[in-house]
Length: 441
Image (cartoon, rainbow, N blue to C red; front, side, top):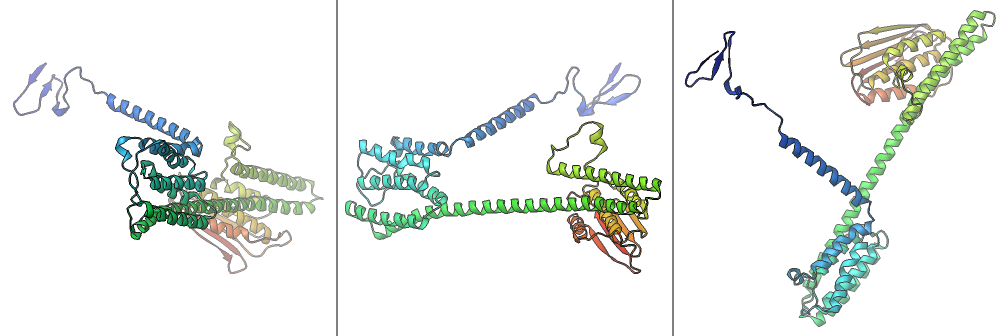
């Protein structure tokens, strides 16, 4: 092996069979590229920290509300005894400062500890804190715990449910009395200063009221969304029941009526009764699928049986639907053009329901009339057209409510498609639907 090197050019190596340029990719022998161990360890530590935070958060929110509200009161209690915070209390009225004594400890406890019940018993909490605040100002302690007054006002304004106006009126009267007492004991603050402090406390109460209004609005919104979701689900279930029950029961009624006139032809009678039995079994299967939608644990099966009966009817099963309608005595021509796309979303089911409802109406109102079913698969949509010629025989007609076509229109509109149904020249009836593929409803 020979090596050729030149200044200013990348290193080259030739071995007789050819040569290759190493460039920047050349690395010394024995050096292997390995994933960053530091990054893997950092990701693992971050994942463990997130898991621990979620577990601690879950434990914290499972605690009683009094336990969760107590720490803030304890912080004010401890801060009132710290030299750095002792002189940072609230001062209203200008009463001369008084050294802390045993009574000051009682005042501090009365101001801070009631914050633990500020959400469970907001009125009691604010009453106790207000009493401690009044004693704090009249006696001249001016403790750091007096900050609890604003916190109690915000919390009470947010959580007090009854007698809110009466409570505000009582607090106003109490504040006027406190102002009179402070004006006699203090250095004589002006009315404007007392009014400013009152407005500040009113702002704290207003902030709590705003939080309460926002919380109520959010609760009402969630309740409204829940009601709308339940109503939509009920509508969907009713629509599915209509599609399943109406189609199969209509076919069974038609087949049973036809069997009346076949008593003289045992072979045809047996065939007609077999069709009734097959239709009933199909109805049971479809109803089981619908119950699976209501309760995912209902009718759970494993193995080949679960795979043999999919919960969502595919467009490929339209042929089975057509055969069932033919056995009920309806002449049906079926045409399928194109290949279904790999992902059809909910379009598959909607197309199936369109054909099902149209064939059901043909059995009801045009029994015996020629019916055609055309399903076209495009790259982005499925087109369905079901037409019935003439009026046919109404001997087997069953009264309808009109819910079927309205429900189909809603289904197609949800997916962004087009739906039309109406009579045509010559007394026929045509149902057309254009359904975008790959859309989830």
